[in-house]
Image (tube, rainbow, N blue to C red; front, side, top):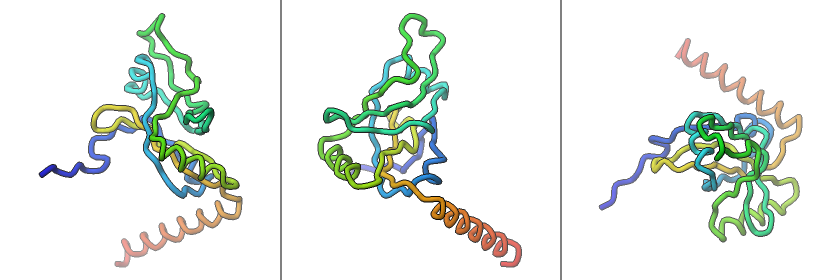
Length: 159
């Protein structure tokens, strides 16, 4: 009988878009692969990546990661890569159709949440289907977080 893998057991986090959960209400997430060059993988292993300003879009029936930053790998002199090029994301046809339906709804966007290496050593991207929050929604989220912190402090001190 096959043993179950622990979720996120040996995953090495490369980059995280922490601002995305503040600016967007995440409705659904999807793990997808990334098509990379060799120098990009080496650079990711060094941790030189940023996905804070990036987004995903569907063009010509393919899913693309746009405006993500992967720094140059210094040892790859002639065989380097562009730092902010479009990178193809790998998903199944069914998942792509679901993403297209979700994105076609009003106000929905595809936001990268995390970039990491999975247990097999492959670069993966956690993509969120999200809707933008209004200023009042952001304030409400902050209030809930503050209330939760106060409750946990009280429970720790008097509990």
